Length: 125
Image (tube, rainbow, N blue to C red):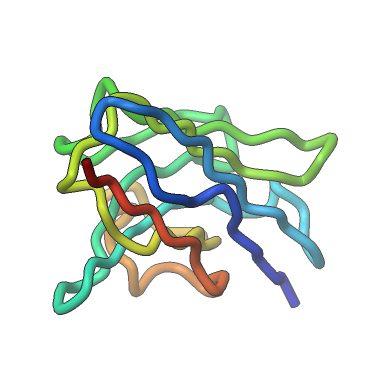
C-alpha cells in the first residue's frame, strides 16, 4: 500500500517561498499520477497541481499558475511543490495524493487513492 508523507510547510510572509515535499513509500512514482491539493478551514479540498506518470506533463490551478511548479524525483521517490510569491490566499493545509485519473478528471480529488496527513502553510504578515 502506498503511503505518503508531506513536509516543508510553515509560516511565511507574503511574497516569500516554500518548497513542499511528498515522500512516497510502498510504490513507484512511475506507476501513478501525483497531485497536490489544498484545503482551508471551512472549504472543500481544491486542486493545486498535478504531474502525470507518463511523460511528466504538469497541470496547475489558475490561482497558482506561474508561481508554483510540481516535479518528481525517482531517485528519492519524492514529489515536490516549490511555491513562490506566496499570497495570503495560499494559506491552507496541503496534501499530496496518488491516482490514475483520466486527463479530464485530473483535478477531481475523488480520483486519487491515498493521501498523506498534510502540511500546514500559513502566509501572513
